[in-house]
Picture (cartoon, rainbow, N blue to C red):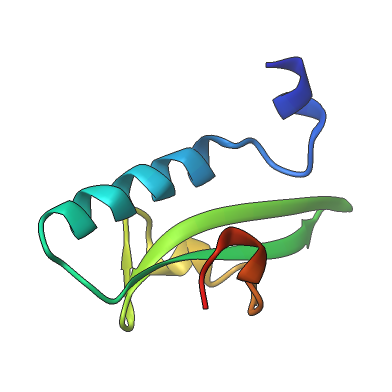
Length: 80
């Protein structure tokens, strides 16, 4: 827990996004991707993860994720 509090972002958004993606894939829904964005808010660097299906944000609000700059290259996560 202490590591998560001091890290770049708290991992629960990533864990939730991974779980949601897996549930959707298990139901045969394809084209789902995990997106990661970053921002500086009040001088603090923050990162956030969410799920996108086409142009639709799932499990979060489009308004909230719009405050982050999306990181485009996620090959480190095994996505191409």
